[in-house]
Length: 108
Image 1: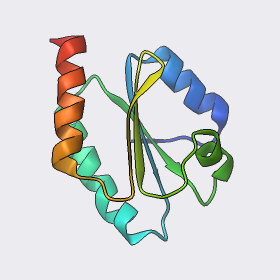
Image 2: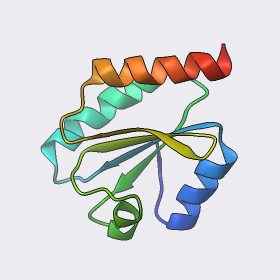
Image 3: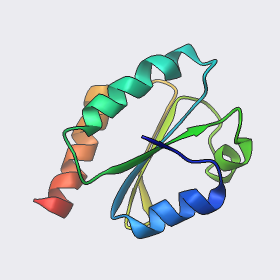
Image 4: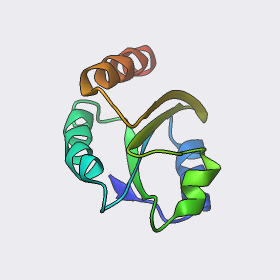
């Protein structure tokens, strides 16, 4: 997961990539610290998904721009359009199922 530090970086990633996952979290959020490596492991199964991490403590404006009010949060974009939004209590199983469905539609 690459670290994104400004709105231009986020918008460029979303615009230029077919399938993008954004993970919003912070270092002082225990659930975020636990969930992030699990999401990264899950994404290894989907090599064409570009992913980015946004630290909401350091870059609050990015969280606000995407209407993130609780963390951890995961947003998935397909061709610039938000298709998945999960926050706070994120089921990896459900997230994987939803990602897999979109992934297979686009790349298989």
